[in-house]
Image (tube, rainbow, N blue to C red; front, side, top):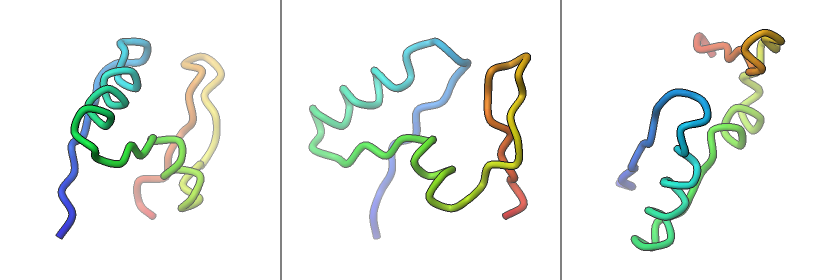
Length: 59
């Protein structure tokens, strides 16, 4: 079974930078949220005010 390290937080706080650093140092694969959302077709819409995709969490 594969293990995962999940980095979460508010927009613009450096999650991607930290996740990529962890990936590089640990030898783990980095998988970005956008990649997963697009690969599985989870985009429901776009929130212009928040400048963020709306994700269908029921899929």
